[in-house]
Image (tube, rainbow, N blue to C red; front, side):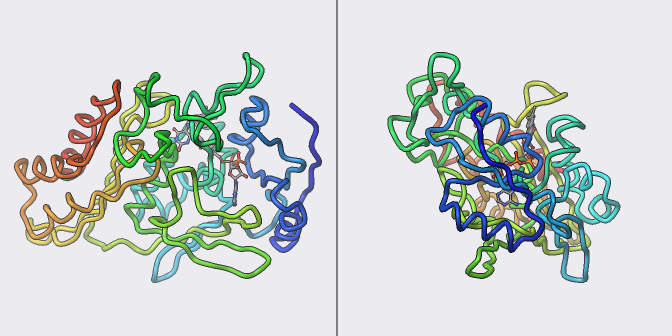
Length: 323
Ligand SMILES: Cc1cc2nc3c(=O)[nH]c(=O)nc-3n(C[C@H](O)[C@H](O)[C@H](O)COP(=O)(O)OP(=O)(O)OC[C@H]3O[C@@H](n4cnc5c(N)ncnc54)[C@H](O)[C@@H]3O)c2cc1C
């Protein structure tokens, strides 16, 4: 690794002031499970002059519940989410997603904020500088997306615009189905961004002087069935090939409301709006589930090696609806 300065921030204000003063030349570090790999591989064109450790900020972690829903501090470890009785009881989908992340060690160090802000796992983007030079691609601001003509078996089948790397965060998919919002702070004040506006093709909307401070999760309906399904190659430790998260409310066997998110099929979490519309107001049977699954992938444009993801998406979506 190259040398960098290291600052422990003891308040949000201190971290924000440091970020502002470094003018984009510093990076936040929480658990470090993603960032340290990026620095070791020296994969990016610019190397940070400083890291600002936010783990030293008190009160930025923890899970609070009130009548409206949850407030989760950005520093809350994924293992804390897995063990939280309130999340297990009322937000089971989020617990499932957190449980599916990495290994116990990763979940013990990795924070929810870091998971949501982690960089993509595209193997071209992540190619280490020490092995013949880093790959400079569209996502890094120069050059093409090498997945388009290369090995694209794990890349996007939808919404690839210049870059076909997928959003790697399982937590983001669960929170998309739960309609979460993010509280973001800068020295200029706070703003709240719905998760559907947070992710962009090349990452997220955080500016270099901003910190994600809290995740706000509205309470799902009491009668809703929550499901998180993740297809991966290795059951033990692996990122999703495709994931589906759903919150579906039934009354008398009829679907009254539905929120469905698809993961690892696009650079951003996808809301399966057409599928939601198809199942609303209908009894959930195999025919409706199949129709919804077809609609969800109708706009898919697979690359040369990943058309199989369309079938995986359809099967997971049908299973989630029938759950
Ligand atoms: C072996 C392995 C397997 C994995 N498997 C999975 C998996 O199956 N599913 C999955 O979803 N993830 C997986 N991950 C990713 C893992 O979940 C993330 O590395 C972890 O959650 C990141 O959290 P962190 O606190 O360590 O973040 P860091 O590494 O500290 O930070 C990651 C990024 O987020 C930024 N950041 C951190 N906190 C904030 C904040 N509050 N505000 C603004 N920016 C912030 C940092 O600047 C950095 O850019 C895996 C990782 C590894 C190494």
